[in-house]
Length: 411
Image (cartoon, rainbow, N blue to C red):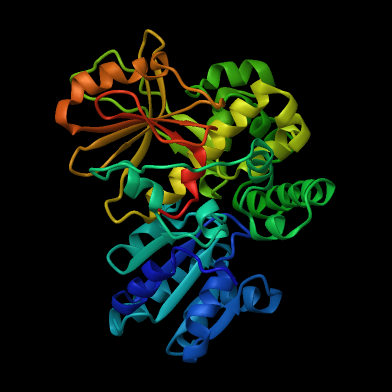
């Protein structure tokens, strides 16, 4: 079992919080991690994927919770929201830390009653698919630490284009990573998406036209470079805007989609504030578009779009682990100047990231950072262009080109 970068944060939460909830997309390894951390301490494991337990908890949630042991793992708890109020009552009587470790494939905070029951009693941690750093066993939130450090990396960090294409198509879901490339991985992603739609989405909503969801996901993948335009999606797919709004909330709730808000400040009123939508795994991204390794290597446009999504996902994973809690956003002005990703810490420091699917960079690639650097002054920490070359290169004041392999290389 590969060490997950979230382990330390999860252990810390269990040491001082009565209810800890581990959430994330289905098949990211939540159950495996939860059991590995606390089952050896005498914890009782129950999963609501088991029909008898599911029925018992729904029939009498109060009695079900009262019969649980001192330390309990409840898996796929989103299937029985009725247990949250009894858990609240139990915790109010006994606030010992680590009593309940809950896992879920849907964000409970979208349910107002659940959110109210959990308030002040729970810490929620998100487990993403494997990051590239985890797969290389090279550490945790390295890339965000580098972006906000006073001194950037130096040296050579080579990666072959073929290896990079393999990483993008493979993604980070544990089962997909373990399979041989090509058709076996493609089959896993196809089955995964079918299972998600038929099981999780149908369980949470009365949507009858589930066949619209794969088309929407594919359209979102193709449009991932720009900000979201629901009217254009509605026109292209023949789906009402109101339905698209509902679908997007569902996809975000089950962790297949991450919404990146537009970065803005009072000093920049002409900034576009519409969010950018990012699929949660590059392997799923490529599967939806039916792009394999050969397609990425032969088509520069496809490679560029997939690489940008890949970098964005890795930044999102690292930001979730970083104790400074940087917020991941994008930047776009009304005149069309764009920066792929912007990270801002709570103290207002900003690092900006652009992705270029080329082994060479030029001074012109850094001009898009000029306005942001001018607005922010000393708050602008660094502007980085990730590229497929092998050397860290300086391009002026707080501007550098970084090899994309720094996303997983240990520094």
